[in-house]
Image 1: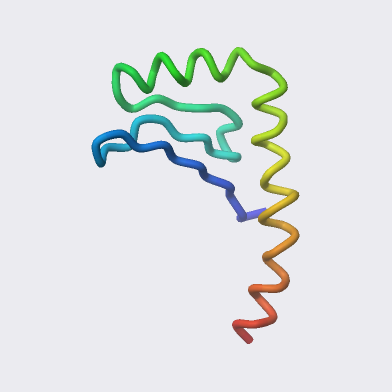
Image 2: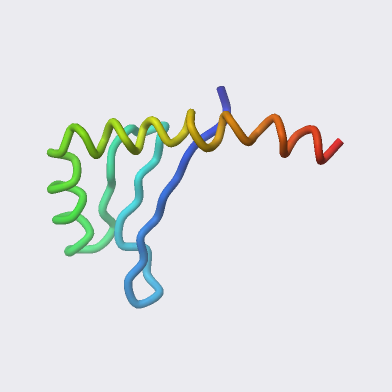
Length: 70
């Protein structure tokens, strides 16, 4: 429940755009990032793929990481 997949994109050491699985869409933080986010959010297949990464990557690996930590 409390696992979140975040993918951030940077340009010139500033966070430009971010996808967060808890929000379910891209968010832009710069003028250009807002444009990228708007374009990417229109692509349903891209959003589905990004949302699936939480289950494919995070949920698959969390048990492995948790067991190793203990």
